[in-house]
Length: 426
Image 1 (cartoon, one colour):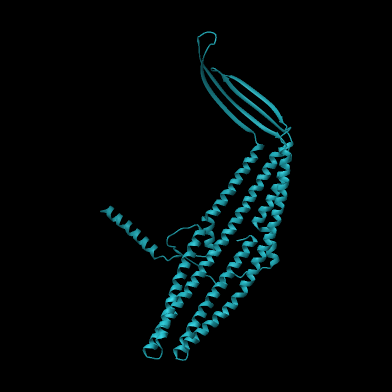
Image 2: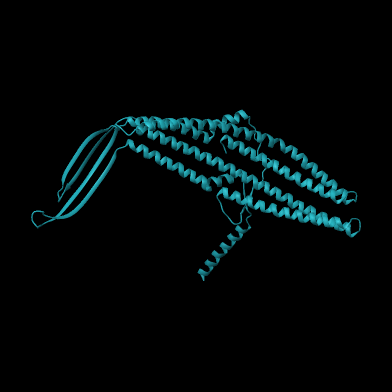
């Protein structure tokens, strides 16, 4: 009986928790929330971080050349043989061996150090590539985020348009029933309502696609999204900066530009490394071991030093130097091109931001005027002064004006995000 009571209590608690969870509304996500989720879940960002860690591991591999190399070996063999002079079996021979050896690079005229510096630059360049990937993905996220907000606004415009046409249909039908308006007003209102409903269906589908595009960038997958985006002010942020400051910040902070500079430095170091290929290498080694056919084993040891000097490599080393020098020239021109692209990128983003900022007040005035014109047209039609075509034209103008305002706000928010991306920041 007590066990039954305990089980009943547990099931009741589960039922209460499930009911409470079911009553919870969808989670509201701000732009910062979406960025945080993206940084944790986006596979492209995770892949880039993993590649950077791989470069760090390669850096430690190159630094291993400075450290002693120690190896241990052990072996056992068993054999039998027959004498060549007499057809007689000699017997089974057992052989045991073990040894430990060490070697240490003494001096190689900086080749190991140059290799480590080159790999260090590769590691730093990979870090900059990761930052560039993060900035690009965050910009794509902002595009999708503002795209969802705009799609919600557009759907609401079409939803209100459907309601307006439904009211117009009722009004036209009432006027026709009392004989004050012709039948064509009713049929026209019905056609307009159907068109508005088709527009609403398309807008709802566009919103659904936008939401799933946002989830794809965030790296989350759910059949039915259980979240809504936080609707902040229509213009989410005022962003004021001079073109000169934006360009200076971009030239100093763009991660792709920093990566290109590091690759130029790497190319220059490769020239030094290729030239060091003509230099000798000095090393020391030593070993201690045991071997024999039975125990106790005989021990042996050795120490020594060596030098390796390349004499002739079939002109390979000389051509390697020429190759690295040409790689320096290519890297220099790549840096020049990257700087020019940054200048164009910042200038384009800055001008687009200026245009988007100026469009918003104009679109707002047009929206207010269209609303007033629509109200006047409906009022005139209601009192029997205006005609239905006037109402229809006013409603189309109002919908277009509202959509243009939504587009202006979306373009401004996106222009801010694009300028930040061009400057190398989130």
